[in-house]
Length: 272
Image 1 (tube, rainbow, N blue to C red):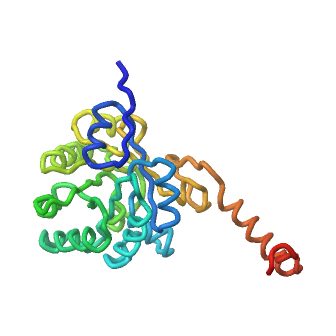
Image 2 (cartoon, rainbow, N blue to C red):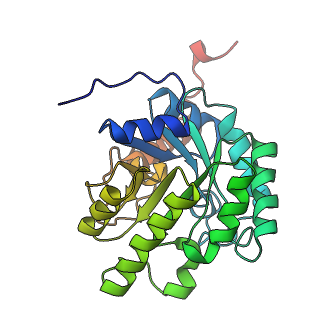
Image 3 (cartoon, rainbow, N blue to C red):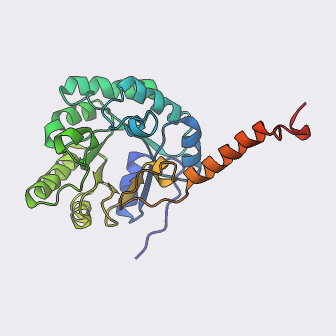
């Protein structure tokens, strides 16, 4: 029996849990600035992630590691000012929570107070359990992140699919259940086998958002620059490009430059 889709005027952590229980898929995209966030929110995306992927797509770094807490707060505050409906989740960047639960809490509080974000996201399982508990005890909602965790890329040594072996798969399931038990409202699963991701989604009551984790989970997330085809150098199997903005924008900007050179722009109707 299908359940009628509820019209949410504002998405909250409670909304996402309701959506899972009602069988409604959850949409999630990244945004890092006011203008893009306004478009994403107006289009009806449920969760807007201010991801540490800003380190890659906004700053041009090879990994997510260099981005700082101050920079994440800057991006998040820009996004929050644009959003009226979506739930804004902000990544805690590398080095801001791993070493000490008290440092993790200080970092999360800064994000919530200085950016106005609605929740934070942390990468990892039982190894950061105490940090998660500390943040949750302060009343700050936490989204987990398991599977391929880009902040640990130098530990993994590769961006290849995680949890293909039984031991790692069992640990991932245990970590997902732990995240649910301590009070996380959702968890992202990145680049793991689809059957494992579906198994996790069925074994916990909180929403599971996938990226490269198949269709058996409760929702999907992509980096907006990838989804819109602004980044033409990144082509993993899980990415569906909905536009080829790289080509469209290059052509438009090239035309603008040519029009300026030829004195075609501005014309008589484009000046005072």
